[in-house]
Image 1 (cartoon, rainbow, N blue to C red):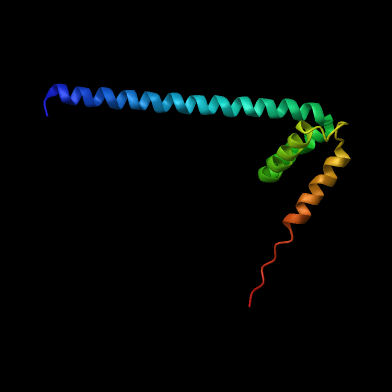
Image 2 (image 1 turned 30 degrees about the vertical axis):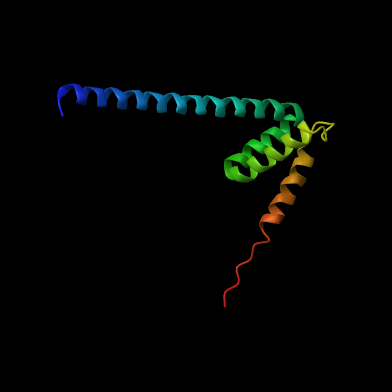
Length: 109
């Protein structure tokens, strides 16, 4: 290989890396935008105490909080939530979800 071929390979590789980096930046920006939209919707449908509780649940059990958030957003977008959700209602939703999760049993023989 001569010097020109090496330089061409380097240039192509650099362009490829730049393209990959730009795609990653776009994905990250999309994630941030989606997260901001989710927060805005949740701010509209949850009372402050319920939002705080959901934030605390998210720290301890992110998968449960994510599922609840997604479900609440779907219900809000479909128009099934008419009033803001109070802390008590959110607690009952979380209890229902956690009771479903605890049904898993391991039986050893």
